[in-house]
Amino acid sequence: MSDDVRSSRVSVLDRRKGSFEAAAHPVRVLAERTAAALGRALVPESALAGVPGLALRSGTAGPVRRPSGGARGGAGEPGPPRGGAVRRAYEQARRAWDRPLTAYYVILGAGLLITALGLVMVYSASMITALKYSLPSSYFFRKQFLAAAIGTGLLFLASRMPVRLHRALAYPLLVGSAFLMVLVQIPGIGQAVNGNQNWISLGGPFQLQPSEFGKLALILWGADLLARKQDKRLLTQWKHLLVPLVPVAFMLLGLIMIGGDMGTAIILTAILFGLLWLAGAPTRLFGGVLAVAGLIGAVLIKTNPNRMARFQCVGATDPGPGDSCWQAVHGIYALASGGWFGSGIGASVEKWGQLPEAHTDFIFAITGEELGLAGTLSVLTLFAALGYAGIRVAGRTEDPFVRYAAGGVTTWITAQAVINVGAVLGLLPIAGVPLPLFSYGGSALLPTMFAVGLLIAFAREDPAAKAALAVRKPGVRWKTMRRRVKERPSGER
Image 1 (cartoon, one colour):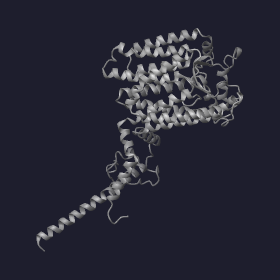
Image 2 (cartoon, rainbow, N blue to C red):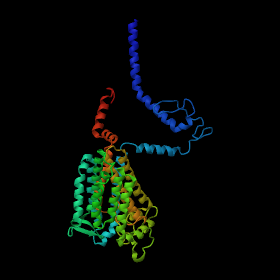
Image 3 (cartoon, rainbow, N blue to C red):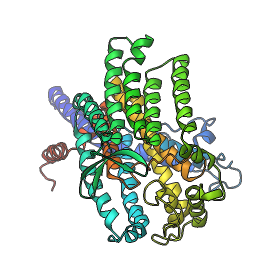
Image 4 (cartoon, one colour):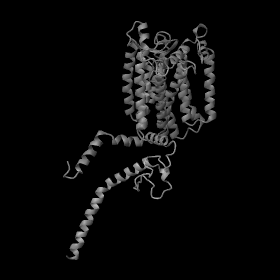
């Protein structure tokens, strides 16, 4: 055989060998990684750190040897370090939380779960109140369900809107909210509910509270204002940091306080402080604004006997003279009678006329009575997850508008939930604010669900989240599957 023929046969064999190794490479890598993972599960890395040849590294293959002692933790083998399972669980949770779409799904899931559970509790807590006024037992539930359906549409609309469109809504929403809040104070147009002049009748049983939309308007307008000033590097000057943000916020506060709604004014003040904090306001400036707001609030509380009575009921354990603390005390009674798992849906006793506003401001107390400590902790966990995901969205973005708007929405929902729950627990004075997404009230539910949609839209704007969502689109999957089918060998099915 000639040398040329022999060399050509050798080259053909080498090419076939190389192609076989290339084809077997993914299988070999998978086997090596599986062996490495099994080695970690059988023997901790810390136990093999000092043994040559037994170090396990991800993506590389090393000799895997079972411990000679047979069962794990047998004679002659040191057991695993204490807390290893807890540490692994923590690492898995941390890696799961660091995924690009975690905040997106947490905000969407927590918002919808709170709303759905709120619908159940509104129906349970409002049945007796509806029958008391000779209405169908599902009267308040039907209205809340309609508001939730509209709010869900607003949530998904806001989640699909681009950021520039949200910024374009800032000024029209602020002007419209302020105009409606002025109309509330005109006799014949505005209506008073529970002593507060802050409602506009829409005809029939439907009413609108413009101050609830004022919260969303202040967040969008304030975020747009601060973002434009940051782009021009003006936020280092006090006058640009305060003007016109603080005067406009005080104008809205004045319109709200004319109607006597102290609770909404507190939430609006919290939103203002949240925006100033995110803008990097100095401690002296922040403290000065806080001192002025506290002084104004103290004067308003001192000059109103009803507000003073609410402060005196903090921590009360009996109704007091004239039953001045009746609502606060019976809220505690409802929570105390719930126990660990509650009396069951619909089995509340306090909603039978003992607890005022059982389906609005004090729905958390009915939740504790019917679902127990487990139910209330579940609600608080959902709010904590929603708030933490909002902080993550605000902290990871490079867009200043997204940071201010996400921080403002998170401040709004978190502060309102804390004030409502604190009042029910007797730790704070009763401010008359609903539990966000949970209490009865369409005027409060609609802007809050739109705000949750804002957070979802901002979570989608993250570059890593955009890439992950693009991969999950049906069209991309179908193209990938077709490409894989074409690459199969002709002999495969």
